[in-house]
Image (cartoon, rainbow, N blue to C red; front, side, top):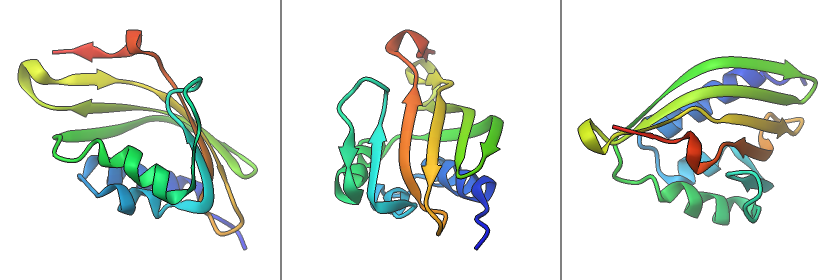
Length: 122
C-alpha cells in the first residue's frame, strides 16, 4: 500500500486550524503514536495523551499555513505557521515538525522543533 504522506500532513494542519477536538487530531495518530512538542519535553504516548495535549487548543481561534514539506520514505519534515488568538492576544509560531508514519499512513511519531523564543505576540 502506498501512503499519501502529503495528504496526511494537510489533514493534520486542517484539523489543527479548524478547531477540531483533540480526539479528532489524535485520530491521525497510530494507537501507540508518540508526540514530543517541543522537542526536549516529555514524550506523550498513545492517542489518549495526545488528544489531551491538543485539547489545550480548544476555544482558541487558530489558523495554519504550510510553508515547506519534504518527504522521504515513511517520514516527513515540514515547516508551517500557526497563529492563535486575534489582535493583541495573537501568537504566531513557525515550528518545524518531523513525523514518521506507519504502513496505513497514521502518524507514529511527531517531534516539534521550536522554543518559547520563537513565539511572536501581537
